[in-house]
Amino acid sequence: DADADADEPVYTYYFADEGHVDPQEAVMVLRQEAKDQGVSFVSSREERVVELVRDSNNGQVVVGVKTQNTNNGEQKQLLADVVIVAAGSNTSLLVGGGGVPLVHNPSRTYFSAPLSSTTGPILNRTLVDMVSSLYVAQRKDGTIVVGGGAVKFGLSADKKLISSKDEAAAKQLEMANELARQIAPKPIGNAPLTYKREVGSKPMPKDGFPIVGYVEPGLYAAVTHSGMTLSPLIGQLVAAEVKEQVSLCILDEYRPTRFIVVDDEEC
Image (cartoon, rainbow, N blue to C red; front, side):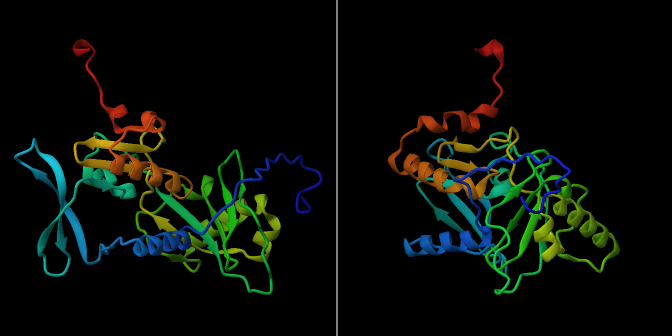
């Protein structure tokens, strides 16, 4: 690495098969493909799920959801053969925390301004500090993105975009630039970080592993921290289990039932 200090030892790992995508861009592509396949999306700004619908004549099996219009308060039922909850950090609010226990996992991410098209890409791959878990990546528009590790700690309670004009934010930006510069001095030198975005909580299962499977009859949950990397595979597996009514052994270790405490005396 030409940017590395010759006096300091550098330990790196190169994963030839790995890459990165812009999450927002990827989600929009996936949404459009889903629409092309007949999927309908309802914005949470228009309607929100307020409760599960159960069949009182069939052992309280979940058979749908009840939604409420955010403007006029009108409620309606949406019935389904299976309700699949894939709501990220809000999953436990819909299905109860017992089967889908999540831990509070706030996030802070820093960004540079987009670079001009004449500058060209600075980073072709994501750089990760394997010790601190800090990462540095670059989007297609040239924006440098830095997150994880030390920069995500000490978050404020709000989720607003904070500019570097704020004194506290300016100090955080300075720290983030300093940390990122240790990993990628040239990219950060060309495109210093200028603002940050905070998220109240990212989805993080209690034991760190995906939670996939039936929480109860008619109610299926799918939540994981590694959404962008695992969702293509998990989506296919969930679709197979629900549509074909089968249980795939590859998911056995990730079932919600692993969080159910069994009394030894009853075994």
